[in-house]
Image (tube, rainbow, N blue to C red; front, side, top):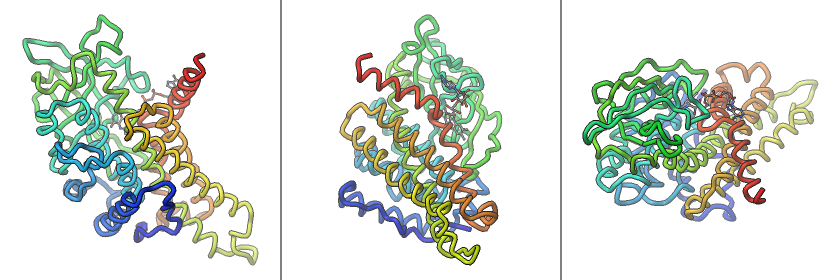
Length: 396
Ligand SMILES: Cc1cc2nc3c(=O)[nH]c(=O)nc-3n(C[C@H](O)[C@H](O)[C@H](O)COP(=O)(O)OP(=O)(O)OC[C@H]3O[C@@H](n4cnc5c(N)ncnc54)[C@H](O)[C@@H]3O)c2cc1C
């Protein structure tokens, strides 16, 4: 069952939080989603998303709200990217994961650290939706401990040659370009010996081992990739050699904020469905909303949605102002992703046996939401980062 039109009962469009322009923009994105995504939201779950849909999203301007005008973006900022993320995820989580892997996970490192020539060649076509990007950090033996990565590159003349494996790469088998991280100086701390490269997936030595079979996010493709001495010309090095870890850390703050926007999106339809169902379903001669076991779950859902949105917007606003927001982005992602799992799970519980069927659009969002306490930094790693920032603030 697909989510239905994008008007939302609980609209949260409080003017205390959002500007007039952001509110107008959200309406615009919703209309686009109602027309282009909602009617095929269930079908998309059979995957993969049609490439043409990314093109349409690009043409509508929703790949580049946070990219500079010179590169083809609209330079509005991350506060607009979280609106796009939420509204598209509200229809289909996997589709937005694919969009965001291209627009933000790949797009932000290229947009912030690329030269004007690199942006023109490797970012503008992504913003238009004509090309697809991905980010390659995770490896078979390296997940949370990114500094321990084994993928390495050696220089021969002006060119670099990258060898290694990257696993769980969103868009991996679909991508034209991958922002790929590799160790280039094994003799120093990896934080100073890592470099970011733009890899053209048509280059010889690049191959797809397989697409992973996933619990959710079925409309996306997440792949295991192999790089066997893939040649990288000097104009595809991002930033300077040795700057890779800095680029990676910078990327993660915007990625985590944008994922928090997606997490709110996964929770909205299950929440709405549960509210309506609790109002209609009768047991023991009463509507089930009259039982506290049900109605208090609704209260908790509403609270988590409101709080999550405020935390996410706060992190986006800080990053848009150029402020350091590692703690706020981590808090927003941790809170909203755990909330999305709880809300989708509670909604399924309120629907009883019906929630476990595909007749209602709850199970899909629960499957999609489950990923996000893992991808982009696990909940455990985020708690580690948050406490580390807290102790720094106390100078302890
Ligand atoms: C569908 C999907 C899409 C993805 N997309 C991408 C992508 O586009 N690009 C990319 O590079 N990666 C991607 N990833 C990878 C994702 O970011 C990693 O899965 C994640 O960072 C965790 O790494 P891991 O799976 O190797 O788990 P591990 O790091 O091996 O962790 C296993 C468990 O140990 C815990 N743990 C590890 N270290 C600590 C610690 N210090 N303290 C406490 N607990 C700890 C973790 O929290 C986790 O519970 C994707 C993953 C999935 C499943």
